[in-house]
Length: 89
Image (cartoon, rainbow, N blue to C red; front, side, top):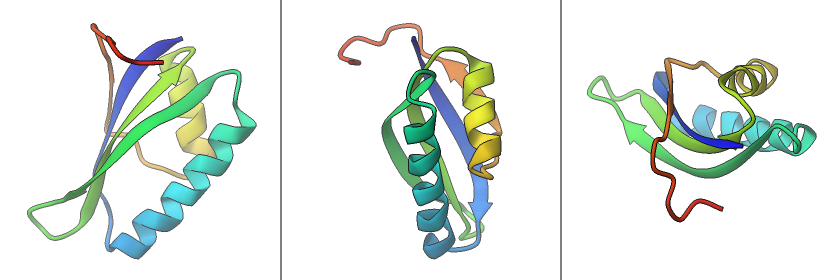
């Protein structure tokens, strides 16, 4: 498993939609326990007042991150592998 940072820019019009998306993400991660685990998420207030997020996952591959996002109906703008995951479980 590797650590990945997932960027979702201006993904939701409000915090309510973002919270709904977070619940879907959690449910899918529980279904994909052998491929992905959520570590931490940060909610972003974008300049246009929409909501984005930066999420940190442990995953078997970038493809697993994409499968998780598709199943949870989440956008993915960028997936970046973390080079130094010191402190990650």
